[in-house]
Amino acid sequence: MIHNETLHTPQPGPPAETGRTNIVTVVTQPFTDQRPGTSGLRKKVAVFAQPRYLENFVQSVFDALPGWRGATLVLGGDGRYGNELALQVILKMAAANGIGRALVGRAGLLSTPAASCVIRRRDAAGGIILSASHNPGGPDGDFGIKVNLANGGPAPEKVTQAIYETSRTIRAYRALDAPDVPLDRLGQSRLGDMVVEVIDPVADYAALMERLFDFEAIRALLTSGRFRMRFDAMHAVTGPYAHELLERCLGAPAGTVLRGEPRTDFGGEPPDPNLAHAQALVAEMFGPDAPDFGAACDGDGDRNMILGRRFFVTPSDSLAVLAANAALVPGYRGRLVGVARSMPTSRALDRVAARLGIPCYETPTGWKYFGNLLDAGRITLCGEESFGTGSDHAREKDGLWAVLYWLNLLAARRASVEDVVRAHWRSYGRDFYTRHDYEGLNPVTAECLMKRLRRRLPHLSGQVFGAQRVRLADEFSYTDPVDGSVSPGQGPRIEFEDGARLVLRLSGTGTRGATLRVYLERFEPDPARQGEDVSIAVAALAQAAEAIAGMRARLGRKRPSVVT
Ligand code: G1P
Ligand code: ZN
Image (cartoon, rainbow, N blue to C red; front, side):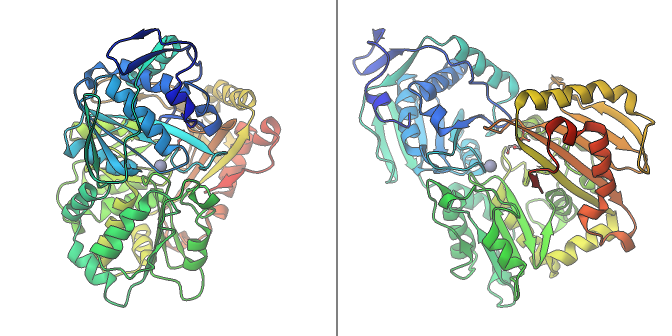
């Protein structure tokens, strides 16, 4: 895809059949590695650049979703290297596969949550989002393709499985032989029988945000002269959204948005909103004369990091704080029916749900598992420890939404970020939380570690590590309460008698080797002990993780590659 010639000179060999004059059917052979992971098909650009690689996958999507014929599709991406070229390929294939109408974000841009909102608002049958999320961009970086359905959410496993099965037997793909569609101007054009409408990527989304949040209160806060904020768009897709919403609509001064210009290589940094990659923002927020509020979003705009002045809000805590303060936010006041978190996310949310008297569901890692609960009206807010929070306004996690929610609650509470979080801990207790990632592992070695751990699980209960005794050790298996589908093998979890917990799982989004994630959490109800440094608070737990899973011995790693 990323090479123009694969588009205009279909390879290999001559067309197998030619239907309508300008639809070409191109013979192809399957690739064996097109199984979508936690969040779509994500690979190195070099993998996607192989002739027919993108085309095979896209044809598999159209073949697996016959209901898309004649319907409206939403298309866009995070603007990374390959975004526009891939969109042109997809548009021509969509036209040849009978799609009725394609709504494309101007310049090929649409954040993941905005795509979800547009699908819902415009009654589309689904969408294709081009993104590898927070992974690096550029020619040596990653590329990805995600498929969403009519509810605006990621395709569930049975659909991604069907796409994968199709990709294993694919024999041909169809594309229209036509010139590229100009994507820089709003308006309609035709591609064969398909209508292409280039839409403003921000408008629908901004209108929805205005309905959910108290824009007047936020505007008053941002223009008061007493409150300063910074938003780091990381040269990724949220730049245009943040300029429009924060600076233009809500009156924050120019310069509030940092790195607001989308770039195909995200300026050379991974667009990953964490303490390691949002360095300039972090330096400012932890420096002298720090602003009151800092935030960043990832490549495709679904993740968020929230910072106060010299204060980092752990994503699990952020989710709990949002739930606990719903009464302050117009779109959520009095309407929290239930909440959900991914299994490795800390249990801070459960404590809020218990007090509110609403259910809290525990789902496997990955946003797609929230879809059924949201569609069935069982939950209103949900989130993951991996910097993801969202609600029933969309079917994707939503970075800027979380930023606006925080601004709304800060405006209502007239307190600092740190004060809000510390008051939350005093009231509910603190869940110390940290995640250790071991990246770039040999996949076989990583699998071996997990296999050995799984074998040990049934024997762990009652064993003592340091001062902690294991209360329960099992592997998380999820039964979806809405459709009864079962997702086994979602990661071993080890709970200790003092309420601390360890979770281990292999990443499903990496593109280089395997990544082991070790999640550590410990509950501290005593306010006098809540000020401890996280790494100290979980040190004994980290030792227990080492004793149980043996990262040093089995992976040859003395320490994790990333700690968040
Ligand atoms: C990671 C996160 C997960 C998130 C996903 C997509 O998946 O852990 O919470 O939903 O990215 O953003 P993983 O690599 O762990 O499979
Ligand atoms: Zn993302």
